[in-house]
Image (cartoon, rainbow, N blue to C red):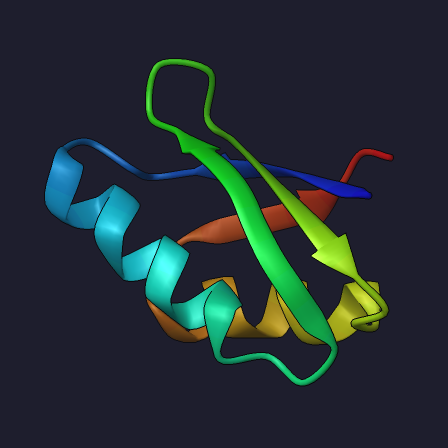
Length: 67
């Protein structure tokens, strides 16, 4: 599982955008959760962490891998 810290999400629309962006990354089996209150996302699969960060940043949010 890969955990991301995401900054800049402020509403449920943001959560949906991040969820959809992560879901489209090659190697993602499942987006476990995108948590607005914690500013985190958890993803299962073999996706490259840098690809996950890039997908989130393409949506306009800051992201980094924390696990």
